[in-house]
Length: 221
Image (cartoon, one colour):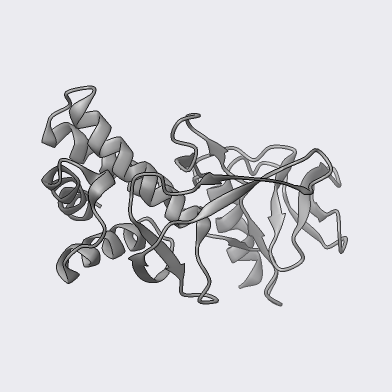
């Protein structure tokens, strides 16, 4: 994480006017690619381009008005999964660049401090590894992460193995329905999918995602 953060911060501080940058040498584009890769976005490539989002009415329809996804960074991220523009990764990269540039110019943070901050953000961006629930390939995916700051809306806080399980524990991967923890028996709790009604039992003493991961792995042996 620190190596990627160091190279990214050095690149961010190299240019005084990012709003005037249109393209970069191949080795510097690679730094952007390596940064979003370290942040677990699985990019296919990083290329010049601006993306816009669309404001929505309460019913979900577009208002016709747009807003920039990458207001400062002149590059967008293309997803390796489907080859489409990766809007969230592009927004995250733009947030990272703004954090480094504005941290230096507006908050007078030094290079070492910015590297520390960016290393933390890269690490924080890595999502919780999905937890295998059954031998058939059912997985629990973490609850959608929360935004850390309004101005840096693509910086989010993911769940970690040491975090406690709540009543709503996350999302059933592939089914994409919410999953809840509920008391099932005297000795066991259950995770139940709201969509397909999958029900997985585990010892009620389980407290964290890491506990659940270990217990279910043991149950499958």
